[in-house]
Length: 163
Image (cartoon, rainbow, N blue to C red; front, side):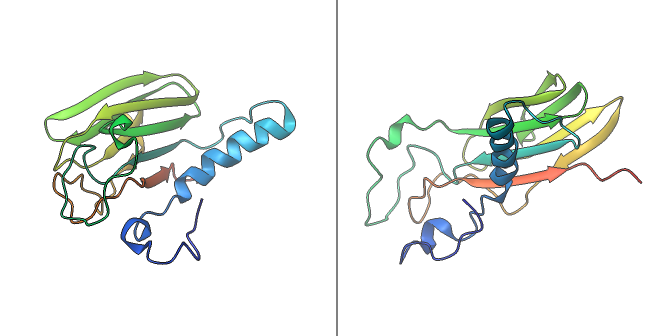
């Protein structure tokens, strides 16, 4: 899953810059639950977000066509919030597209639609204070990519440890 080492030859077009390390945190959480039979306590607030880098129906001059069943993908930014206490989470894909959710303590999966030109930003707020903010500036959702890429861009952020 991450980090990418020795990906298949000539895969750089869809693997470079597409680190999936944020998913390792989810993997650790669910692997621990599987091995022990109970979900571990959430001890640090975290947000993990991901999206494809371009619209499902984008057209590209890429000589390699879209994969089979490409049309089943949604144009969305997905987020998993690991909250130590109930929180307010805001997901944004542009200045005019944002949605706020009230989440309980624990793990919550959320999504928000994205359109070409969109970005991803997630904020976890509790008691009026920002606990976690994720704003990966290297991600922009493209409408007309140079090559097709149905891989996921994944980013994550955690709350600062208590001082």
